[in-house]
Length: 277
Image: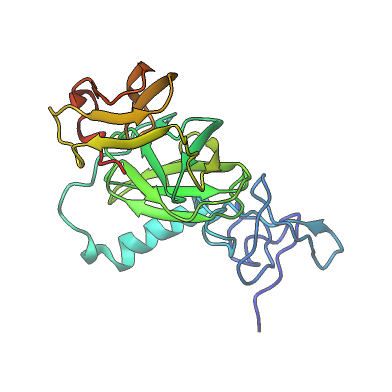
């Protein structure tokens, strides 16, 4: 004899379905999507003719990973009871990890609603360290509710480079910290950005023999710019680091001759500086 079908109203929840009364009826099998409220897009009908949707936030449902994030109190109590009675000899004597602190808005780059310029479809993500976290889950999506993601990756650092992001639509990103004991902490705030895919640099026919050196450059060195021009013009030289921050900017008035301009020492950008091409 099979398990009785749970009714949408929950009147037989104690002995039907999963036997937990704090988890609503759910007839969906296979992986399924949730909407921006965390419930199933598909409506179901119980034996009495009542329509309902499934709760996608429950980890023990078949919703996609982007939807599931919690156990119900009754589910957690059942697992604790099983661990305490059946698996009591499997516990470690070591102290548990410290509980994760508040996440809040710890995202740094890309900033919110900004345009990120890229030549190679690689985007650099960076955030502040969350208290007691040993790792982070980074999610990037084209949907504000993260119903589906274009990238999901784990790192133990506070930065990550994601490749092959080329859509002209806005991207949304967030992170979720974790450690060995706590993996269900809430997500950070969400930020969005768009990509400006640069395919080529404009060519100034009046500039010749443009040279930047040394390359690569090391902390404490100067960057030198040398070029020749056929006519007088106003130019602006800007140095940015890998986070997109401007570390030096200089206005130039060029005459028709070769000249060398010394930039400020690059100590201000430290390890964020890279070689240039």
